[in-house]
Length: 348
Image (tube, rainbow, N blue to C red; front, side, top):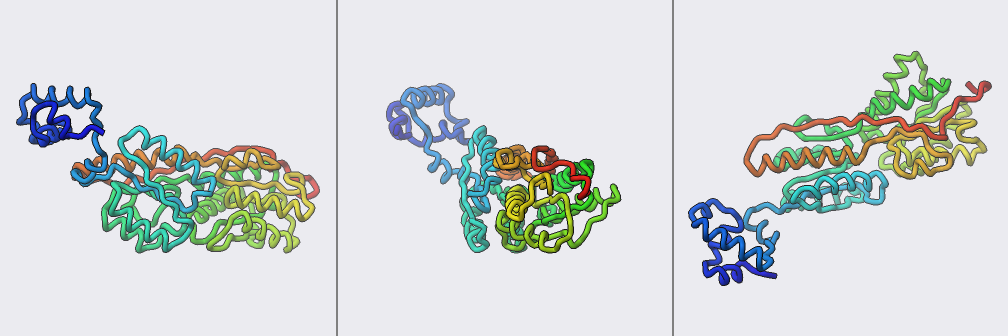
């Protein structure tokens, strides 16, 4: 690796002169233009490449962005990470990924470390991300940050989230237009804000359409939860009530997969005996049997939007400029596949 000292020796100037020219410091304005051009030409000819670690020490900026995900094995995370990577690849910043594995203590530890080492933070949120002391830490340190996938209960942090209310309105409207009136629901865990927004969308459409929701046909995943197993167990509990229903709306796609397994295990056919609706539209949804009707979250768009918001905040921070928090909602789309159909006339 070619060093500044070697470039300086070739140019017959001091290493400090070369450093000022290559790093475009304010003092370089006092260096004659002919000397600066000579340094640049020699450095390029020798194949000089700046040392990013040395630059970081000098500038106090690491040129890295911390990216925290709740569970890297979750298909949802993979699509988010692709969107983040695509955006950061067009900048001078590199992502530094940590997987908190749905562990609160791990989240706290990694957050404290990252806030001392990176220039900004992207947090793919779940219920663990919104403990009050953690939100307080982000606000107090005033580090550029953006929350993806959740709406924190504060206006001071930037966030980008799917419009969950709109998504579940679309889902329920689809089932309603098919003719379903006896519909069961498996809500997300109470700690997850998405679940509340989804339920608001469901109630909003039901109220407008005059659709009666049977509270006995509403089950809730536990905290913490595994959505596949949770969907399976909650569906079995709903079936055990012996209250007829012709459709089931699940919190997310993994929950819906568990629901379908439970229905089939009980001797029911999907969608002939019961339609099933998911949420997220992870890649596996299109290849499941039957292919799952789902509300598609535009995860890469969500992630790239969040990354762009963060880049603006980082640039403003480096210039000591004030920056306002940004809040964005990404509208989802209904993807209709084989898991939903009109109910049998005898069951509707």
